[in-house]
Image (cartoon, rainbow, N blue to C red; front, top):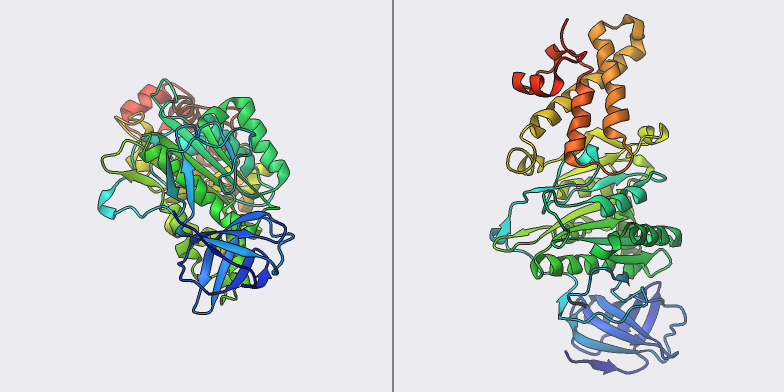
Length: 465
C-alpha cells in the first residue's frame, strides 16, 4: 500500500457526509482515503464519484468541525479493506470495523476488500442442508437452507429486533453436538442507541456473543458509514466461511435504514432520483449485498443471510421490499394483526415463502415426514382462512360441521404452532403440527399417507365417525 498526501486548498465544498475536491491526481473509484482536518483529526473515507475536474469523497466519520480551509487528503491507491483474523468471534465493532468493546485491535491475518469479490457462477454450489432457527413458523413451514438469502419483512413497531436477537441466540446446525463450525454475524444498521444496547445486552446474557461478531452502526453515525456497515459484516462472514470453514448466519437489520442512507447520499451527489426518490441503481446496489450469500464448490463453509427490513406503511409493494423480493429466495412476513393478538413470533405463514425449502428438508436432511406435514398444514390453514371469510358473511351458525372444525384448526394453528414461548427444535415443531391436525377429520388430510395418519394422528378426535 502506498499513500499520496494532497495539500491544503483543494476542498471546494462539503455537503453532509460528502467532501468535494478539485481533481489534481489520478485516482480511482472506491479508493480509500484519509481526510485530515485543520483540527488535526483523521477521518476515514472513500472516493464515491469523480470526473475530470472533481473528486467526491464519502467521509465515514463524523464531519462536525471539518472545515474546507486547511483540509488535507491522503489517497491510499487501493479499496477499503477490513483487517480480519481468527479472533473475530465475541468482538463488537462499529460500522467500519473499529473495536467498540474496549478490547485490543484484532490480530489481523489478512486484509480483505469490503466490497467483496464476485463468485463465478460455475464455482457456486446450490444451497442445501437445513439450518434450524428455533421458530416453528420458519423451521416447519418456511425452512431456511444454508447458503440461502431469506429476508424478513416487518413494519414499524413490530418486534423484529426481538426476532433478530432470538434468531442469533437460538439458531443452530441440527445434528451437531457443538457450535465450533457455526457462527453468527449480526449487523445493526442505523439503529438507535437503545436498540444497540438491547442487542449487546441480550447476546451477552444468553452467551450467544461468544459465537457472534457484532457490528453496531448508530443512527447518529454518518450515512456514508451506514452504506459500509453490511459490507464490513459480510467481509467478516466470508472470511469465517471460506477461510475458517464455518457455516455463518448473517443477520442484517435494518435494510430500510441502509436504503434511506443510499437515497440521502445519492441526493447529495445530485443524482437523478427514481421511484420514490431512491436512486435508479438501488436494485444492483442491494444485489451486491444479497448475492454475497452462498456456498463455493470445494469449500466447507457457507454464508446464509437473514436481512430484516421495515416496510414503510406496511406496503409490501414499496421499492425496498419489492426489489429485495426479486433478488432473494423468498420472504418471511411479520403480521401486525397477530402481534396485536399477543402471538409471538407474529409470522404470517401464508404470504411467507422459502423457495429453497425443498432443497433442505426431507429424508436424509430432516424428518422424512417433514415435507408432507408442511404441505398439509399449509393447505388446511389456507382453507381455515377462507372459512373465516365465509363466517364473517353468513355467521358461524351458517357453517357446516366441517367448516367449524376448520375454524377451530385455524385458531389452534396460530395459538399452538405459530405462537410459542422459547426455542423449539424441529422435532418439537413437528409434534405441534401433528397435534393441530388432530382437530380435523381424517377425510380432510389429503396430503398425508395412510401410514402417516396412523403413526401421527392415531385414534384422535380427527378420526371419522
